[in-house]
Length: 463
Ligand SMILES: [Zn+2]
Image (cartoon, rainbow, N blue to C red; front, side, top):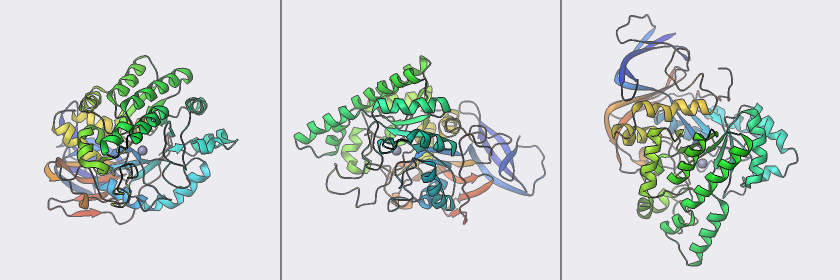
């Protein structure tokens, strides 16, 4: 069965849009053709001049399944992904029970989530200090890597009893194994001692405002952690990735380390690119995340770093609390830290980045698709529009302008700090391995494919 997508543009160099046709056979791209080339196909689909990008990959989501499905589950999370043009998510190991810290736990989780997946998915594996109490934790980590996790997650500062943080010397032990296996380690990078000291100072004066929360997680915490990780890179030769970086000074340390040949990279999230501590004051817990949003200078620095290639990719850190109960507890300290974001990742970056001229279309493709595909070891099958690659597409109607309404999102707990924002460019269709899993017409009518057809993708695994 051959399907020809025509009347579309694909991205080229910088902001170039190139008219093309895409021939899809089964799950793969069979040919990328010029707009007027003749070709035989079983079905022709007119995309009305839309922009077709390689499917977006959200490399950092918390879909909480199993264990915390009152917050999100794999069905609702991946439906939201499909509606946002995301064709693959990479789920974190720490916010489901049991955590993905062994091959057995991974197998158990797969049995539960795979039947619900509307888009493809990979899994992060993890190492917590809970796991280090087990004398065979090294063997467990090796098995987890053998099972095909995309990367390994650890925390320098965790608030979770079921997935506790590691001391730098413990991370050092983990890195000895991952360096040998050639798998990256993603680190929640805030210095525990700095944050704990700042928090006690704030609490001692009775602080309980959003800005008090911000003061309890100062940029210095991220900066010190980035230095620690740089030193660990130096000592071990391992590949380390700072997840959700918010401080521009911390990013600067990462960039400098890379220029010295160290394998240190970083991702940021849309909320750090769209909001500052002023917005936190206004929005309160709606924008509570960890790390916390930072200053205007940090935000501008992150945009510059995004265009300049200092940041490897952007991910949502999708983490929804039960709305409104967990987000409106009466105190900023007990309000849930996290925002849902998988559905708005690509629309926000397209609108605020490309449409506003902060980043080129070429760069958008790199930070939402190509770079994450390579980082998670699937760069030979995902992340490009090229013959032989998976037919994963994010189709954007560039002429459409719309207003974000939390009530119209598709994840389980619907709230967003982007409420009321007007965005340019709207997701028109989402294709995963040759199947249209989501479509939205001009009148806003939405269609999801009935059967979840997302598949577990393993690091470096044959397709
Ligand atoms: Zn996270």
